[in-house]
Image (cartoon, rainbow, N blue to C red; front, side, top):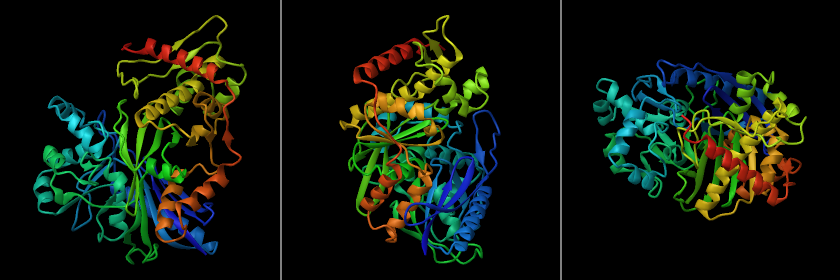
Length: 499
């Protein structure tokens, strides 16, 4: 029987998963790799270690699937999006450690671009804010700091790529240098309107066009595995590629405008499908490519919450009021409500839609009757409040009402959080049985291209079956939800400008 192999290359680990036609997991393997912190604000990976680790887990997953009588007919790739690799085309060796998306070494250069009044142009072309987060400034830093690199890049001797490009290059033994539109849209070098590298942006950052990968669709033939790896069968087509958050959006079957997913991890990443035209945000959200299939491109608005599950970790590690993160729901459920307590976890400032780096965390509404249980409940609710603010901003930007919120990530297993999220939004929250939607999305994109699944409608039906008994419907009257939200917004105002 046939199956799809999905390579889910994350920030701290590499995972490989094999899916059957029902979207169920046949096999999986995962292994962590090393994180490097050479200086304050700098985060690096060894790109060769990433490749070796990803290859090893792929081999293990393929072996498991083969034992169950399944053959791999296509490969999908999902990846940490902005991490940047520069390598020698002739040897395939990286010229330097990979610069991770979390790395802040180019923040000063980003400030220079803003001071030069370039941000309006950059936002209009890319849908992104000028920020060290994105890979274009990381590539510029590598070209500036590796002796002779820019000249070699100009002669076509070097290749740049995010991790999807790096894996494709290695799987095809250097025959294919490509990236998909979703990863390209996170570089600050890609025009989301023309769907091509932008010459004005390349001149601005002094990037030679010859170093850049070919841009391909998210679903379609990218390359074919070679026979140089005895562990990986030759001739398997690579047919699905997407950045991790876009892959999760696709894996959650958010195929219509107004459908959104939220990943509840250390932070929260929310994406809303806005249809076939990019939407310019008035709230400084990001406009990004969701995917491209055939001749059709879908776009999304993206916003992030800095402190999602990290808020619960702070209760555990900072305050010591719980022993492990999973204890928080039981503690919070021991009281009927927060007793008027609001916790604003602005430990590193506030992101969208407030954008106040001087905000700091605060707990308001405390009385002599307040207990650690009230604080725990307020921490859970804070995650939902922040996500609800993102939804409101997205709906205002796009002029599209949210139809349902699909969720994944570790904190999505918290039933109290999911129920309160539904109450605040006034719309159902859908949690799938299989929460590894990033890997699943890459598999769906790959399988579509080879006819393993015939259509997005077929995939949507599979997703509906997976979520039918995990739906949280609103129970709080809308007036009460609005009052709770107003209380949150007032608490946020108290936290602003505290630094």
